[in-house]
Amino acid sequence: MIGFRTLKPLLNRVVIQKVIKQSKTKGGIILNTGKEESLNYGKVIAVGPGKVLDNGAIRECMVKEGETVLLPEYGGSKVVLANEEELFIYRDDDIMGTLHEPTE
Image (cartoon, rainbow, N blue to C red):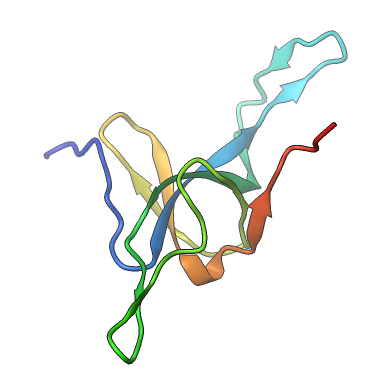
């Protein structure tokens, strides 16, 4: 079996690394619950060139690498790379929005 380390999405596909929920005590100790629960948002790892429209033009993806995005509860295709990193592939149209840190 050949282990792949990188993934380049095609067309309007977006590669997402989901955020894993960590359980913490009030004292800041991280608990290992044995079950990793992923939240409905993640970081954009890679973006395809865009969607080909009927007239042949390409509409670029609405998100950029490094952004944090809100994901639908269901959907996406799970991919596991050689380093056992779990990534998910979504269509650009399926991403619900971008999330931003509050500004002071």
